Structures are given as structure tokens and as C-alpha cells.
Length: 326
Image (cartoon, rainbow, N blue to C red; front, side):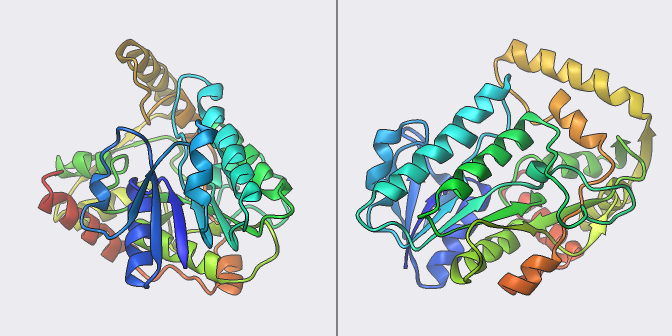
């Protein structure tokens, strides 16, 4: 199979490209002009320059492909419109390019997020089956709108995957928690009783491959996560253990979160660069829980995340150290 991967040079995209090549598939990587795809170094992939916000660059990218894995997305910005430009408009441009191709792809795997569905109730259980989507943030709303663009394309054989928090080698946002834990303390900001799902990057890549290989109802939606559910305290202690550290948990009152997010927004605007920690992130942190329902993916895709959390964190810590990130 020939697979097009958008966001190929990113954290998850590079893991997916590597998996596809190991499985014997040809890979075409969509990489933005001027970007050096360091994460793809050493991989035998075809680099095509283009971007979702430049629709004229997409027909060449989708020409002749069997599978499309759409991972490229905007995670942060100063306005909701900044995210919508990529997550909605860019998705629409890619879908239209696929439909206009002489032979549309056999499978379109759209990578969304748990944020598109909204939080789960407190207590560690996932959102009830059939519950209406209720995203809380700009990111969640724009990812949900992107899903709707994919689902509306009736001639496109598609499947939608909603990963939980993703971590692993090459990931830079969760890296911050490793850097904090290495110092010997674990600030827990947000709900004390909140539960969260996570997914290891290489495991997510495997889930996306299974989604491409498996027949499902058109535009079916699947949560993708490890079956292990943790609190932030448990995750912090697990990260410290992966680093060989004993860390002390420091409880921060929940009221600290909103002003911390506002200060982060201010500094980001001064610097002219949006950051992952922001008032939008605080909204997610104050939600009751973010727990994935992994049963449908296990049933329909045959996917159960194979890497235990402790092993995944240990592998991530080892990679960070080996590459000088810690």
C-alpha cells in the first residue's frame, strides 16, 4: 500500500511512518515548505512539500495513494480561528483533494482527540455510550468540526480515531513533566480526583494502522488509549519511578490554575508564540476527568494498547536521556 501521512515529521507521524515502513508499505510524507523533517531521518519515505492551508499543494500529495492518515493539526493559538484554519479548513481542503483525485484513497484515517468529545464524569469511567459531544476548548471544538467535515464526505471511506494524552520518544509537551519530576517534586494543579487516559506514541501508531486495515462503518469514531487509567498524582509518581527518582507530591489549590493560565497567556503574547500551557489548557485541567472508552477499538479494530504504562514511561525516559533532553 502507498500511504500519505500528514503531520509526518511530527511526534506521532514519525512513529507511524516508521511502523508503515517496517510493515512493508510505501510512505509519502506531507511536510511543510522549509521544515526540516528531522524525525524522518533514516526512513525511506517520499517527501512531498505542501500544507493544509495551501490547497493547491494537496492534489499531488494524494495522487495514487491507497491510505491517507491525517495527523496534521493545530494544537495551540491565540484565537479559536487560528486552530480552525488548520483543523477545519485544512481538513476540508484535504478531503476535497481526495474526492477530486482520479482514484480516491481506499481508507481515510482521521486523527482527532478525546477533546472533541469532551470530558468524562468524575470517578474513572468513560463518557456514557451515545452521550452528545461537548468539547470545552478551542482545540476540542475545532477537532469536532474537522470530524464533521470527514463524516460529511459520503464518497470517502473514513474512520475517526480520538487519542487520549499521547506521550513517548520525541514528544515535547509531556517532557515538561519528566523535567519537573527529575527535580524531586511533583506539583499537582487541578482536580485532585481527576482520572486520565494516556496512550504511548508507538501504540497509537499501531492503532492507526489497524484502523486503516479494518473494515468499519463509514466515519466510525474510536477512542484510542491504554486501558490503564491514572490520576495526575499516580502519573507523576510513575514518571519519577521511570527516572529512578523519589518525588514529593505538592498539592496546589485549584484556584491557582486560572490566574496561572492568564499569566501564561500574557507571556505567550509578549513572546509572540502560543504555548501548550494556557487558559485553554486550564479549562481542560479543571474538567472532572478525561477517560477513554477503549472497548470499541478492542472489539472492532482488534486493538488493545500492548505497552504497559510503566514500561512505556521507562522507554520514554531512556530516550530523553539518550538524546540529551533530560
